[in-house]
Image 1 (cartoon, one colour):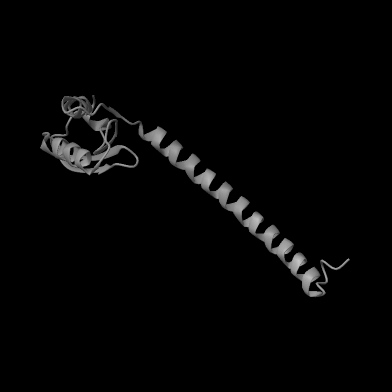
Image 2 (cartoon, rainbow, N blue to C red):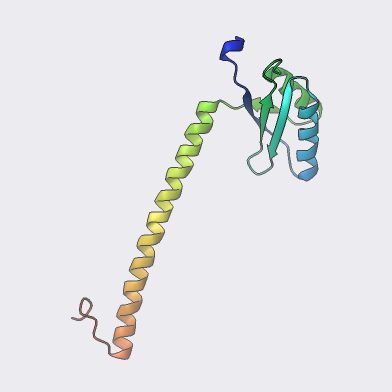
Length: 128
């Protein structure tokens, strides 16, 4: 791999983590590797963000092999794929948010109409 094209961060997808002990074991194993300057493991996303030493960075194959050795199969996540997944999750969130707001507005209008009928209120827009 060309060192000029090398990134100073890697994102690894890790299988088999089920608890805080697993997270600690993965963090410890990655931190022990030559060329790693920092590690942040996320149990929910099953990923590890690895900061590499700029002077002597670790090879991704070395890191995945180290994790495989303790029973956690891992693979390098493509940064472009991570960005696409993040963008699609964000778009899905906004879509759900708009639907929720529309449902709340319709529920408020419906509730007012029912209250107006029960209390004999006059609501100009809802009065027939």
